[in-house]
Image (cartoon, rainbow, N blue to C red):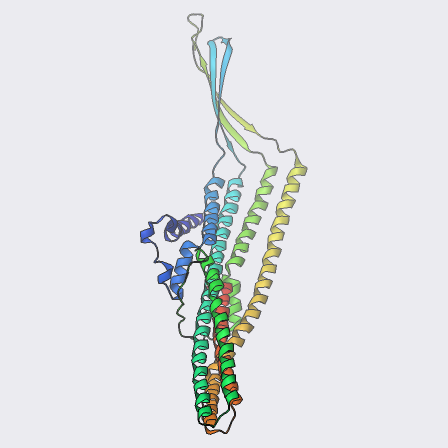
Length: 428
């Protein structure tokens, strides 16, 4: 089972980690040539520094697994007899020894299980970092798209106001209107032009925020994004909550943290048992000085065994209590994290459903009615049955509804992206 960790890591290294070592000519296209969301997501996945850090943290945890399952290094000893030890079979000159320590039964397994669970937790945190990055990209992308649509709407309304000014001038020339109507039109033009300039100046900080998640210089330009037509999503609240509990990578990471903590509890128990060391010594012996001695020059070989004495029980019991407290802490953290995410999801679901209702309201009713009222007001103004203020008021209403409609679409898409981050993937 632990081998799966290495296989997954290897695949991820090929698909993602190796990107940092790729030839720049083979990398993703320059972002200046990108306008749609999937390309931005791909660029961010390959370049975001935070995601690279999370991947390397996963790699760090994976590399700890083979270290945990290894035995301690064997110990080699050498001794040289400054004064030769004279024995019956000959003088002893030097001694060589080697010894290997073996932890108590189950200690290596517990240590390996803890490291393996920690590696799986790091993998889930990498997945959480990727989902969080994609949410930031989507949120910034949709905000930038909204800004582009707001500029377009404001410009269209500016042209509409210029048209109304011409209508007012025509009526004034024909002695059917008053000069204050022209002044009112000019005031509205100046006000809307100022609003348009404010919207356009928002482009720089919006681009800087999007550049930050793409790991680009904040002052580098980005083209206006292309937002795909809105496709409403029907969401079942209970299914979303269920998917969140089953798939949220932060909760999964804490599950693996819990498993690692429990393995460390088992590891703490092993401190009550000794480690066993086995070894061999070889002593080089010269020929005996007395001729005819049996076994003359025979080198003795000594088998050895040693154990450490775990006599400091208070220390070991404290370590065991510490490990159990750590496991309880992780369990409580996991429960609190789930409660926090469920509460956050409930709020996001409300905002998602509310923005969806507003999208339908503006698209199906308010904007079309505002256009109808504006057309009727222009006809009535030309006929002299309403004043110019009514026409301006109708234009303001249309502008406000169009901007609010675009805002509702943006909020809807941003909240959907947040739900996908919390649920651990796309929502069907």
